[in-house]
Length: 561
Ligand SMILES: Cc1cc2nc3c(=O)[nH]c(=O)nc-3n(C[C@H](O)[C@H](O)[C@H](O)COP(=O)(O)OP(=O)(O)OC[C@H]3O[C@@H](n4cnc5c(N)ncnc54)[C@H](O)[C@@H]3O)c2cc1C
Image (cartoon, rainbow, N blue to C red; front, side, top):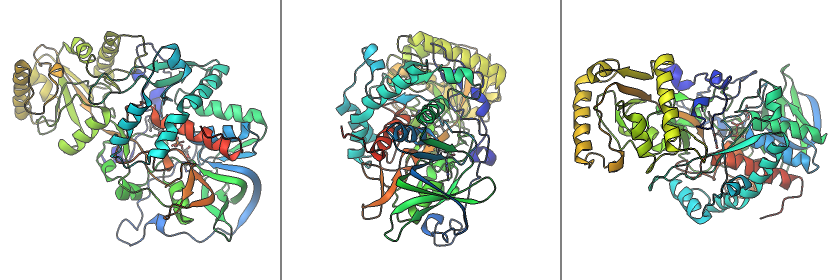
């Protein structure tokens, strides 16, 4: 179990996956890019074990033995979504750009589902949203602790940046599919998740999966500019500062273990991702992440290197705890709105909630890293009925706008059938409740009582135990009976380095550190407390917006919207 908590490889999940109109759930939402090269392990430091200072609080001795010096204008550190986007936009606008990546491949941490509040793809579907409402939902999910001016920039820039991405993708022959959100009154999710897939690059190169397509596209386009260089297996170790404390470059370590100093006249951009694989950061800033069953990024390169480097030159962090992005799909993909039973055999929450809610409810209210969702043979029809009032991430199967709730349920029925055959540890079926419960790691007697009680509630039509809305109450009566394993997985910790609205890293006084920028998951302030999903895919959306705006800014062409 401990090994699972520290991370498992799920990279094979995306192999050979294709998109169906019914949805993308079957793709294996959690496949990351195939990691070819280095991958640092978690680093629980001595500091966490009792010494006073954390790693980020003690700047190391400056590296002196520089084997090679390279002059560039913009140095981007980290070839994920935000870093590759920034590099392309700086290069396309005339800056000389160097992108250094610790790994041997670019990392696409997602399936590329990018959220936007408006776009030409949404216009074509006649879908429009109210920015005021969605931003207020976002901010309140963040406990009003995110910086609203930064979030407002997301909303101002979203349409422009998404349309640019759509044009770019179209120029490579790629398609865009927008998926359906949730009809929930309490946790609505808008239809704004833009899945971009099927481009020529991916057709020509088997190594490019749906999870990495956008990064490869950005890199390919940057290479066309002639003023861009990407260096793999080149982890940045330290920043270089001048006598005024301004950042002028970074020192990286090449494959021979030699140090290369990059001098960047226009700026150094930290795009090093989150702290998922650094236990010292998790313990200090996101302790709830210790409760998940699995960390879901297979390459494990996100060890907070950018956070450390920023702090060592005086950069501040946003206040903790940092929000975690979590999905309860670390075991089974499907559980819908049906009964959850924990290992003690007890019901412990309202199950018809959003993905983050299911995770936190399981870990905090249930007191465990998994539970079981139990439903009967009517689940396909019940799921369809429930989607009138709920849905969204995974409950609605990421189906395309234009498909029906019945399509989503049919795709789930297929997932469950295949799960029973291929991953029986996560999907169970039996003709009787007794036989089903015997297969689960639950207290059987308690679980039987729980199911009886749940059926009474369903008959009564009012859930006085957890007040789940009555249209989500489906009795468990008709065999065969099913159980699917609900398991929280950590996707990312979306908090970090304090930045200005122009992505400058700031010190504890809020003053920018000249020459240093942070974007994507390593940067803070865009989120706080919890990760909002009302605008699905907004994390990729922020990588797009921050990467594009900062790239333009460093090339001197950015126009404030
Ligand atoms: C399985 C999974 C699915 C997801 N799906 C979605 C989705 O569909 N939609 C969405 O909005 N969000 C999704 N996310 C969230 C995702 O983390 C972010 O949206 C986004 O991809 C983060 O991009 P980034 O550029 O900040 O960092 P990353 O993509 O994490 O990239 C950081 C890069 O920096 C490199 N790096 C780290 N340290 C160094 C160093 N010292 N020197 C050089 N390079 C370094 C890393 O190797 C990595 O390549 C998903 C996350 C996971 C894990």
